[in-house]
Image 1 (tube, rainbow, N blue to C red):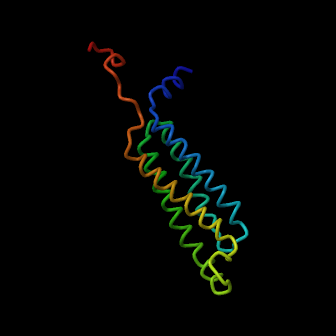
Image 2: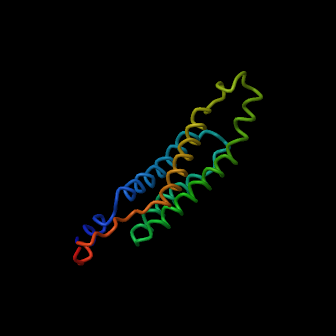
Image 3: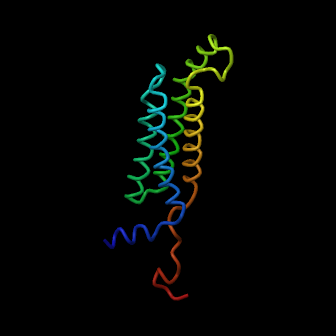
Length: 146
């Protein structure tokens, strides 16, 4: 029990924001899988990468590698975004030929929403990779006299 208490006591707000982005990445994977399941161009790769990104951050954080976890989460989220764009773009292009306007394309709102969610995940994780996620030890905590 002391390990858990000391583990969370040594973390600052950036770590908890990282946990939020890990959960947000998994939620984005679920939203992507559910909202675009009817589209033929949907790929399972972004879903797997987004879930793996969240799990990787949590797993690497548990062994004390917060920065590497955030960096890996950012890389996986960015790769998921690139794969998503590469696999989904033929759908709106083919629908544009038959629709009267861009807004009439089926699922265009879901396509844009998923892209925005993935961009938020990738940017947030990238920023977290550069931020300290543990508290600085104060002289009192180190056992020294100040």
